[in-house]
Every structure is written in C-alpha cells, then in structure tokens.
Image (cartoon, helix red, strand yellow):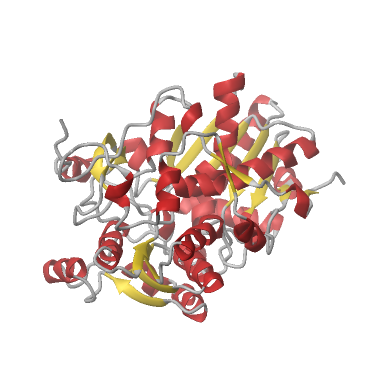
Length: 452
C-alpha cells in the first residue's frame, strides 16, 4: 500500500505567518469607521484589540515572524499530519488522489488554536487581564479558553444559544479550561437584553453574540475582544496550515489541482488556501480553489458584496464583504461554525477577483459525506468539515466519470466528537434540508448601511 501519512518534524514547522495583503493584485477595500465613514486607524481599533494584533491588520510585509512563546505552544500539536485518503478513494472508485490536512489533532480538536494562542499571547504581552468573545459551535470558544489558560487570562464566552443547547460538552470543555460561558442572547449585556425583549425564544446568532462580546470588552480597561475568524490577523495566523500542507504535498510528490475548505467566517479555508492563492497570483498556477458553505447560510453564493456591520447591533466597523445582512438570523442547522451572516473581507475579495469559487450544499448531503468519510477513513469529521468533504467526494466522482487523475487537497478543520447528536439526527432520518429563501435575503440586504 502507498504511503498514507506525511509528517514534518518539529524543526520543519513554519516560523512565520504568511500575509497575503501585499501580494493581492488589487488592494483590499479599507475598513470604515461606523461614525465617520472614513478608513479606520489603528487608534480606532485600540479599545477592542491589542496594538500587536492591530498592526497585523495593516502589515506591509509578506511574512510575520511567529513569537517563540507562541511557537512553543504550537509544538504541542504542530506540525499536523497530512493524510492520503486511500480508503475513500477506493470506495469511490476514483482515479483522483485525495489528501487531507488533519487539524483535529490540536488539544481543542480543531484549527482554531492556531489563532487563539497568538491572540492570547499578544493580549498578555500588553497587560490585558481578560478576553471576551463569541462562539458558534464552540470550537472557537474552546480554543480561546485554552489559549487564555496557557497565558493566565480570564475568558468570557458568549455562545450562540442554539449551539449552547445542542453541544453541552463544548461548554464543559471551555469551563474545564477556566472560561465562563453564557448562552447568547444573554441578560448580561444591553445587546442581549434588547434581543430577548423582542424575542424571548431567540436561538441567537453569531452577529448577536459578537455584539454582546464587543459590549462586554469595550468599556473595560482590563478586557479586550477576541475574534475567531473574519479579520486579517486571524486568517494570517491560520496560514501555518497551508504552509505546512505545501511542504507535505511536495513530500507526496504532487501539487494539488483542487483545494477545498468550508467557509463560515473564512479562517480555516483561508489558512489552507492562501499560500496556494499566492502561487496562482505569482506563478500562474491553475489550481481550482473551492469554498463550501451551507445552503442555509449562503453569504457568498447569495449575498451582496457590500459594506456591512460585523454584528447585529451595529457597533463594529464597516467591512466590505459578502453578506446576508447584519440582521440575518440563521436557521438552527448543526454546522454552528458556518452560521455567520458575512464572510471574511480577504475571502470575499478573492472571490470577487475570481481567484476562488464558492459552492453551497445542503445539510443531508453534507452528513452523508461525513458518514462516508468516517466509514472509510475512520475519523468522524465536524459538520463544518463535512461540507468540504461533500464537494471533495463530488469532484472525485467527476474524476471517475472523466478519467482525470486529479490531486485534491482539503482541510479537515476539526473532529465531530462533540457533534454526535447531529449525526444521530441524520442517521435517524430527522435532519431537514433548508435553503435560505431569497426573499429573506433581499429583506436583510435592504437594511445594509448606506456608504458613499
């Protein structure tokens, strides 16, 4: 049997993050101040983020050195393995070669610690005592709770209520690492109380949870806000994934023809693909790069490319992105990490420039792919990751039809050990597909802020 596992040794872990901003063929649109409508300055962001992270939003160089303290924590699980999915290939009868980068081996079970650890580090370095954040499915909240534990920070997590109820073990994991977790919308903030006053049974959304976390952090001198996706510095930290994958694909002797990742806010996808996007920009590579989102939250495939708030209560700066509107309340699908109304500005920009493409898939087809992966490769993927696997399988079956022996790479962004309730719903035939109605999209987009 061919080699199925490609490992880098500790010394081969990248020591810098890759910053795509200076390599973009067109500059990224600026982030705008919600009051003045002018591009934000570092000082505008200082109430929410430490300056070390703020400057990464504007960094002019292609690489940023990873601090030794961060590298030391990374080495608990990095470099992560790359696998060839030979058993899945055999089950599909495809000539395609399928590879996956396994980010589920981190202590938190996902890719999220790649940014949680440096965010905790930079906050600690600047004297911050406490971090406030939101979380959808709980992967980000778990990772930040762990990062705060390593650097001695308090952590408050506003967890979207539908996931808080669906995934109690995520909450328990966060609390085990010392975080305080509340269901959002909560009674702890004005934003949460306002939502509950209008809808006491609100399932919550990432936009609402962001509003709560920002309100928590803004007025307190000892507290900053931490975000698990969307912003430039978050995607930057994730590029350690793609840089490792490039080295490992070289070990395998192939360059990917297709690279696939799921998208909610864009961090795991961008972390894998941005080094390959650089090859498209700089070296003319023809790699297809596919972002996969739920039909129930189709920000890129059905949203508008426009300036919008990152939260529901309109307290954040305005960012240009694909959005379903900041008032979007997603249905309670099980891929909680993909239930955000907008998309990372960088991922949106890449889609706008046709450097990547986006596909939306339904929930049942997604879980069918997750089960097929588990029954061939043995690893139960997170529902978010299963979106990527759905498209990987579809592309591999197309290769079977055409006879093309393409190389397909995807990011297994997390395991599904805390998502077995969702798999139980699928296996029992109780999952329902939901396509977000275009009428509701139009209604939400009508409330976009007016930007000159």
